[in-house]
Length: 152
Image (cartoon, rainbow, N blue to C red):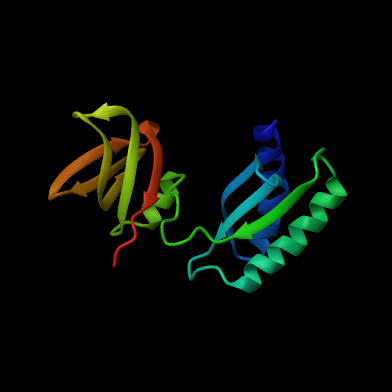
């Protein structure tokens, strides 16, 4: 059910976000302690403002009320991805070349499932990280989870 709702919300949200110059990072629809939550995570090149979140919440909220495909009562939350933004696509890895990332793989590469390193480049469907001055090549199909690493 949640996957279906996520896809339907994505279909409704993408045109609005493009018009506002924003990208959709993630849609989550899930039951939490206080009920159902529909969470949209948005981003743009220069970062997301409170005004961006407010505009998206208003626009998407109205469209979802009109479409009315979500059966349960839910709370709509719109937020930025934060400094440790998830990396969900090859485009994300390409965009953040030069930044440090944490990558967890489905199958081990070498003997490891978990890598922290600088994104050096992408080639086709492959990510190349500098992990402790050693290049590690990770097929995107093997990425189970990836996020930017916060550097201070």
